Image: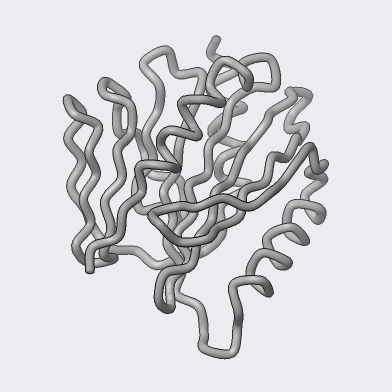
Length: 171
């Protein structure tokens, strides 16, 4: 189990990018994370604990069994960069770190059209899966980056989708 946790942390650090940093409030009992500074709230599974925040993430939460991790990241884009260009850059970054595309598609996130992608990656001899859900609201891209081992991915996938689907924007 320890090597799986160490690998997950290394993988998490590898896939996160430099993003905005503002504080928010997390209630472990309800799973609610509220961030007025960035204008959103999201609900993580109750009982998941806040862990050392991955570089670039506003918050990192980990499953009680430590086999899965979710990062919430926000990035303000320059006016010259469209959401589609951002998605293209995201996909390119995955390729540059050896991530292989498993599947991808579009969905509504917080009532706004967004993009999701599943990527597989090998880090330190371990195989991981990550699903990233991204949506642009105003000048910011909000991304929910969910990671676990390849063998645990199907077990956690519905949890990851539920978290991404809970993202709501504050007007």
